[in-house]
Image 1 (cartoon, one colour):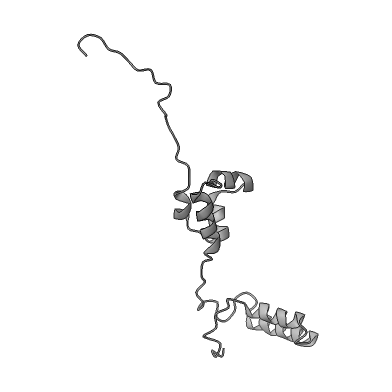
Image 2 (image 1 turned 180 degrees about the horizontal axis):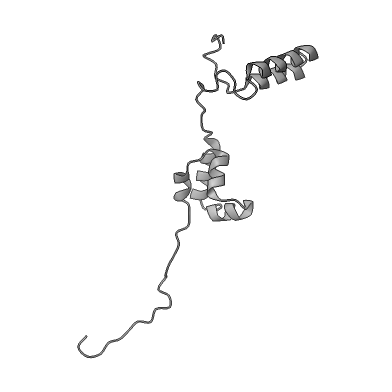
Amino acid sequence: MERRWENFNYNVSIQALEMRAFKLGLITSQQNTYFYRMMTKSGYREKEPLDDEMVLTRPGKIRNIMQLVFSNDLLSLAELQEKLHVETDYLGKLFSVEDVFFQQFQEKEVFSNYGNVISAKFGGGF
């Protein structure tokens, strides 16, 4: 594959580019059909030529928004999970956010608040 586009990193698949060109009327129906036949024949429908070489970047805006919301107590992680009916591992995979990020916002389990402990008064030699 020619590498003259090496300095441009748009993270867009060849198939998405071709489909956009077709929708814009820049290529004909016959060219579109030929393109997909060649993609299938070359095995590029499943894995495109530069898929192994391109480094995917993690989106940061969603993580930053969640940081802002959770840090300012606009919404807790537990409330978000309850409203969306999801677990943190699903949120992490969906938004490419590491598990460590969510740990700082998880509510700590309180095993005892000592609210119903009776203070003992010992007489004598204790």
